[in-house]
Amino acid sequence: MKGARTPIFLLSPPRSGSTLVQRVLGAHAEIATVSEPWILLAPLYALREGSYAEYRHFVSRVALEDFCRELPGGRDDYLQAIREMALYLYSRAGGKAEARYFLDKTPSYTLVVDDIIRAFPDAKLIFLWRNPLAIIASEVATFRRNRWRLHCVRVQLYEGIANLVAAWRQYADRGCAVQYERLVTEPAREWSRLFSYLELAYDPDVLTRFAAVELRGRVQDSMGVRRYATLSREPLEKWKTTLASPIRRTWCRHYLQWLGAERLAAMGYELDTLQNQLRALSPNYACALPDFVDTIVSAGCELLEPRIYWDKLRAIVAGRRLYEHE
Image 1 (cartoon, rainbow, N blue to C red):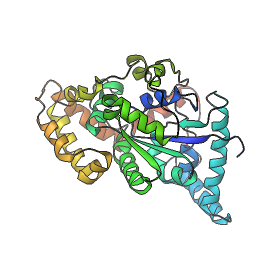
Image 2 (image 1 turned 90 degrees about the horizontal axis):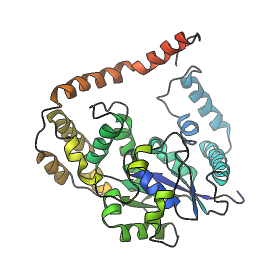
Image 3 (image 1 turned 180 degrees about the horizontal axis):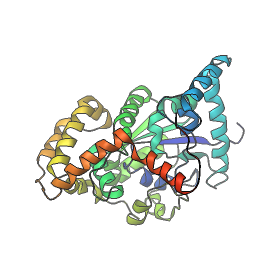
């Protein structure tokens, strides 16, 4: 497409420091960006199971699969159409009319990462990793008010990270992997390496100018934007306080075992090191009872999905009709 910007996909689990990376890169004149576009998730997930809607998603998926089989290029034609739509929108968003790149940072893209990479063969791919224990702690402290309720992000912690690691193994020659910890502890080397991958001149001033980058949109880490206006090492150790209770330590130990040494190594971490750090935490029993209750509540939420019933209740109160989701 004439005048199209090259996409940069910042691929990471949630709470990995992606907003920091987005703002630093967005401080460069050649990179346009907005908060979190999410524009690729729905059209790519339309071909997958796992969604429910009033329009009968499972029928929609079957029909779309049949339609793709009638296209000369099959599913690739469908992905090309999504690519052309996205490139058009990327070329018009984020200001900076002369920008070379558009950076799309949408954490839920981990659920469709293979299709994104397949649809955008010329895109730049940044794989951002963070200590998974810090990811969990950040989610609990930032969005759960320190309650042990991870049911809202379990799909990202399991399917999302597994997809992302598999994609990195397959497409490492096309992408650039960075660790959040090294970006804040070794900024000169790591940010220079990242900008070199993007074929852009590295200006150290972006590490201070990023504080002025405004990401308009309601879906973003507004708390992190307010809290950190400079590169900070403070978040590196905060997870140890958040995860010190017995139930949290036990859950995290099993989660690390599920991730396994090979996945963690691909992310740049060692299983034994993380397990030893977890065991070294001084136990905090103050949250033991609330954590036990929250564990039961989370299991119930995953099984019964009360949010759907809450939405139906609000529909009744608003005088709307109710329909089955299929």
